[in-house]
Amino acid sequence: MSRDCLFCKIINREVPSEFLYEDDDFVVFKDINPAAPVHLLIVPKKHIRSINDLQKADELIISGLFMIAKDMAKDQGINESGYKLLFNVEKGGGQEIFHLHLHLIGGWKR
Ligand code: 5GP
Ligand code: ZN
Image (cartoon, rainbow, N blue to C red; front, side, top):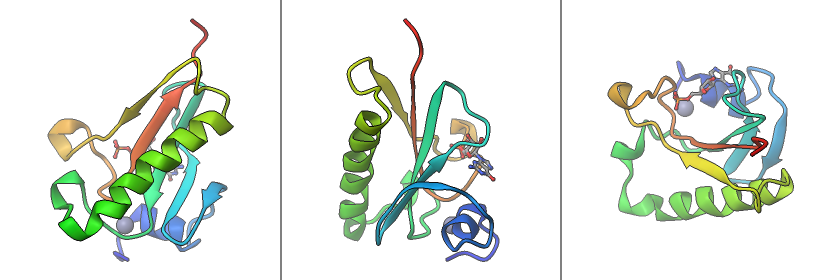
């Protein structure tokens, strides 16, 4: 938990947000400013600043992010039409919230 971190506050329910999924280690919620009809954020509860800060002990977090992402894509009905998975890494990579999260983006009519 990092005191100044918005996503830690969301995870700890200090900032209200509806979770589409939660388990002991992850939450999933909708992006407040969606870039597509479906735009979810898959967020580990452990505060990790960015991909750059991953450690060997975090391997289960990385695999969990992808397993939850493909389950959420199916849940949202976009697994067959297709979607994007995205990590923004640090400021130059477009990261604005410095708590690791995976974007699941899709649902376009193509
Ligand atoms: P980043 O640019 O760090 O990869 O992505 C951060 C994402 O968090 C952005 O897409 C932004 O719209 C989203 N976001 C920022 N503040 C909030 C918030 O308070 N609630 C939710 N649900 N999403 C947020
Ligand atoms: Zn955090």
